[in-house]
Length: 234
Image (cartoon, rainbow, N blue to C red):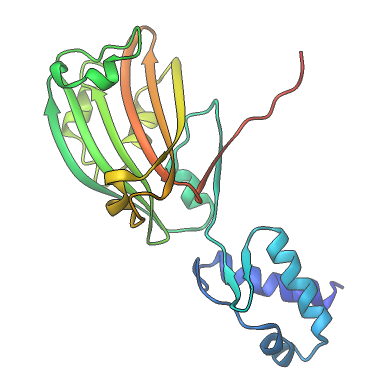
């Protein structure tokens, strides 16, 4: 039979993961939980400590305990499907298309700056916002080669995020990441953070054989996304 502190932890964790207590919500005080469960304060304290150690809650001095803003982790060498990652965490996901337009290659200096990557004369330029649990998660600017993915021109990306669509429809054979720390700048308004808020910027180029497929620049609030690599010595 599980201990009472484990049951309390399980109860509270269930409320967090189900969304009943959303990120930023204040959880009951230890005194309130003691009264609710009819137990010793140390029992509640152990449960709260375990939740804090797991990164599910944040303790703030003199303010109480709050549901933590979740970090998302992906491997550096993988191309993540943001929609699938958010859904796997049990959070609601939404992609909001902000802008879509056909563009000519003369507008692609930023994507063409990487040696060996040239999208060609006709591309689709997309701006959008990934939203997790009702909160902006990532601001995205993407260019898709219509030579490599002609179906993209007629796809409704308000229903499916372009990254998810590409992973499901256009196989890739080579990719390159560039990861930088920056401030939000003009993207701060869409992300609902200040212009000087720290962010993680991920740029990615993908090819199919030798044909460029897409260039994407994604801006994440610094407290919401981790890139992780695991490796062993040769």
